[in-house]
Length: 189
Image (cartoon, rainbow, N blue to C red; front, side, top):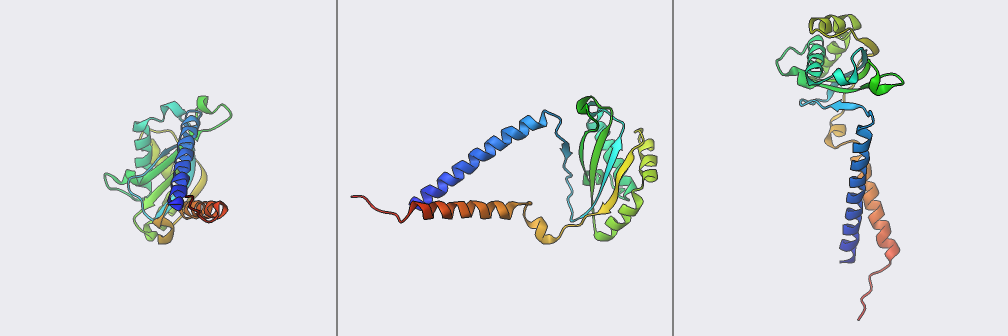
């Protein structure tokens, strides 16, 4: 029963830390933290690149984001109607006056169906081909800050979120340490 109580206390403490972290994340999000658009189609074969585009943070609305994602998907060879959903965007305002800046830095990750298509997409995603497609979509030209590279993940890495094993191990170690420090359970009569 003592171990159960200690475990419940550790769980409650962890929940409290999560709540505090949640508040910190919310506060940080209102102060120009990067905005993340998560793809609905996730695969182990990814192509990542970093771009800069002359669009103000406030103007990069959902319509512009979808056009941008569709443009990258087309250049990468993904021509299906919903293939733009394979593109994840993380963007933030560039420059010293971030929220007022008229330029965004965009970290784009494209989830490709297989390793071969990922390798091909990395070759296709050049500044020229991206800007041709952006122009066709009515968007301004982008500057490639970091060229497209294939970043595949192993099945083991996909099995759990990053750091999950470390978090579980740390919680278990803390629980075992607290049980050891409490000493043997004694019964008072």
